[in-house]
Image (cartoon, rainbow, N blue to C red):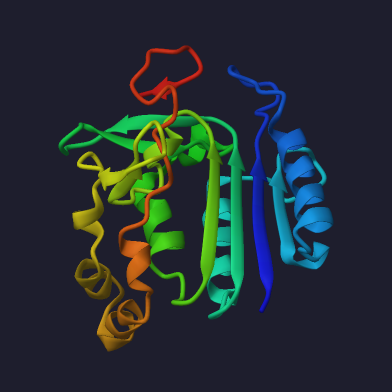
Amino acid sequence: NTKRALLIGINYFGKSGQLNGGHNDVRNMAKYLTEMQNFRKENITMLMDDGVHKAPTKKDILSAFRRLVKESKEGDVVFCHYSGHGGRLSRDDKDGYDETLIPVDFEKAGQIRDRDVLKALIHPMPAGVTMTCLIDCCHGGTVLDLPYRCNDELENMGMNDKCNFKDSLWVGMALQKGGNDAASTSQKVAPEFMILGGGPNAVHEYSDSACCVVL
C-alpha cells in the first residue's frame, strides 16, 4: 500500500496580502511525513511559488488533485496540505457564498471554489483510500464542501447545512461526464466519504478579518 502526499504552500510574493509561512509549512510537513510517517520522497508532490517547485496556479492545483486521484488505489493513504489564503465568492445558495482556495494566479485565473475541490479530489477518490486533508486558510472548514462537520469541541459530528453537497451528487457528475463509466465509478466510492467532515470551521469563517478575502 502506497502513501502519497500533495503539499501546497503559497506566499504570494509581491502581492497585497503576502504571506511568510506557506513555504515553511510545506517543508516542515514534508520532513514530518518522511521522517515520522514513512512517506517516500518520490511520492510527495510539492507546489510552491518559490521559483523552484511547480507553481501553485489554479490549473496546476486542480491537475495535482486529479493526478492524485488517478494514482491512488484501494489500500493507499493520501495526505493533502494547503497553506495559503482562503476566501469566499458570492453565489446563489443558502449562505450566499462559495468558500475558496486562492491560487497564486488568482488575479487572472480566478479562485478555486469548494465545488471544484469536491469534484476534482473528493468525489472521484477510489474506495478504500484513506485520505486526510489539512486546509490551513481562512474559511477552510467548509472548503471541501462536505456535508458534515464537527462541533468546536470536536466531540460531535453534525450536518453542515451551509454546504452545497446536494448540487454535486453523483447523478449530476455522471450526466456532466457522460456515459455509464461515470455512473459506475460513483458506485465504487466508499460510503464513508459521503458523511465525513473536515473538522470545525476555521476561526475566520464568519469574521471580517483583514486576512480574509470576500469578493
